[in-house]
Image (cartoon, rainbow, N blue to C red; front, side, top):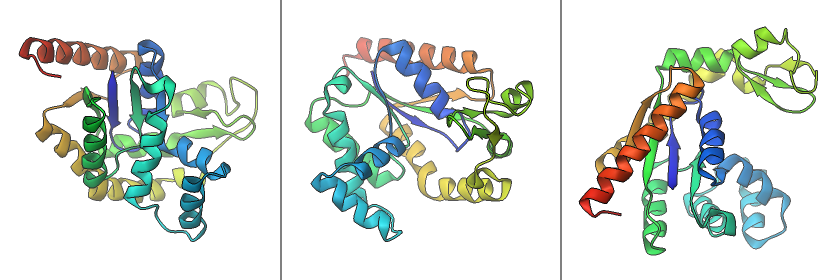
Length: 224
């Protein structure tokens, strides 16, 4: 399956992306991870990306698309992938569709995990990161572990960009720049929408059921 994950910050894209990758046997591809990897590399693309980052500027769409295209060409992504964090804008979505279509590998679905803004802010503000191993936990996990990491016992801290004030700004940026991507994929007929306010296993079950139904519909219509 070739999938894109969409949703507000705090909707659970990272969690569901990992679960889908495990269940479907395909890689979860995070643009954040890709940027960190390319910044450590000494490739021509890496050096171009690094110039923008060091100047504090946004990496242009054409470089971001090139970075994603390079990653999707790797062997582990040949049978499918789950893209998390890309595309962030409609031009990026259009460029991705063009690249995938040219390679004969169009998207199967764009999965939109829907949560209300207030719930997303609550989740982000309650999120904590282990200062020792970097694992991330939600409010319920933090309370259960009494502020210590269940994996290594390290202290759980709040990242500066997870404050409520910052979360509200991030959501506004998302609504301005990224939410139009949801409508783009809806118009393209590949959007799958699920309720992200359920328990994690229930969200995963709904995604898998929706993907199965979509696959049957596409097969019955003779589509891709």
